[in-house]
Length: 484
Image (tube, rainbow, N blue to C red; front, top):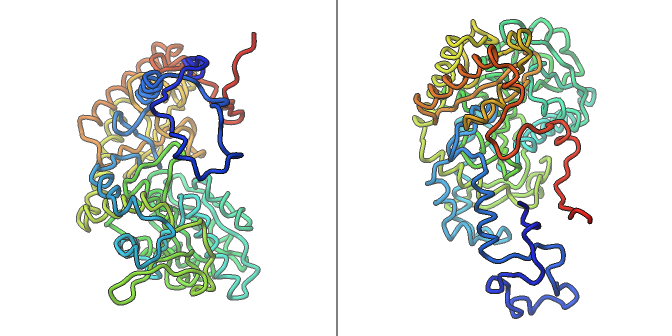
């Protein structure tokens, strides 16, 4: 029942209502005299309603997320508690640098850690407040570089056909034309096709390595040389950084710009539209274009620099200096791990993915790239089940919900039909992975013997199967009382 449906005129939680003195400084014309449009319920009703709602939440604290390309892993409680120290919570974003030295010291060290772990010698800016914003910043810096050199004809961004959908969208938002190149059957980029599109109009190429199909691009050094020789730059989509953390650095592969999803790789809360962090790092050639503000160290102190000192910067991306609480959590996580800990993240994430891929193949699932070792994620296709009984990848995902397991990524990348992109992350135990394998095996058997059951799942969730397309295209979350 909606809380509006529990409302009764005149019912309230008077003890929780602010006293009139609390709003004494608010002009009379701005004060509410009655809770117009708000539900009128008791305190107990409100507590029960929202507590029950919270129990319906699907979260990493309660269930397994095999969600490919999103790295939904456990967020250590130490990161939360330290980021919520009074000195951090009480700091106002307009506080002067002299009164923010502790916070700025943490942010400076985070910049240095991220620059080191990615090999980006031109430095890091923490300003972007989401992965998409970091991606935009990366391409914007590449375009600013070409404009400063007077190379105005370079307006083409090359994108593989397996890329994240945000890659071509970002390129278009930055005023570029997208040139798509194919992926070979073995999962690597078609280098011969790349050579055909490189030319005087090439501004750059957008890649993630490992790629979205879960394999490491084996010819990345050659690709970097080809793009640089053509006058273009390389952008690294950091969505899959978790797979190589502490093992290999994008800067050493030849990339010029990278965004890092700190809410993925560095284990801060994300999802549901919550705050993110898309820090960007650059090679030396792009240092001048980093977004502001950026933290610098002078003597024993720290301060923020703005565009007055960085005239070539692409400018601000938000009002302040990024999502402070998210950045602090990422900083604590990085310090907890250290260099060796980061290496273990990549090793266990990769081990878990390859173990899971092998176990699922033994159960009868078809791997999209069976000859390749997986990185931190891998793809299975249920095209065979669709042809045999009409059971789709979406049906498998809906069925998982009945077992308390979040669905993997569906139908991405688009070049693999009826695919599930699965990522267990490094924080899951062997027991959890084995349990997932058994559930997937049960669903595979149901697809063979009870296809109609699969097509109607889920059965145990608060609501049954929804029209996902309508929900995405015709979102309506406003409450309107029924008439009559």
